View (cartoon, rainbow, N blue to C red):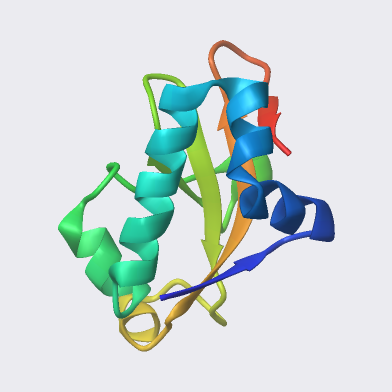
Length: 115
């Protein structure tokens, strides 16, 4: 699957794992890279959902239309299928996701770790 980025700053952050490691630590950075590699290896978003890697789940509220993928206990990679709708038939044919970033949503506030 192809990865695109919601903003240029997100693209830069995900292009520099050295910077990311300094900002959020080695273990979290490795876990993020692992999930990105798994996304890239999937032929489409439907296959990724079926594999259940990182327990992808649809989000609500401010993140409606996005999915969270577990990195650590409270840290999630936030992505959105670049699709017209989120119907399962559409997702079978969609091979691109848009990466919003990495957030720690412990408690009631969202702390963006990347970017």
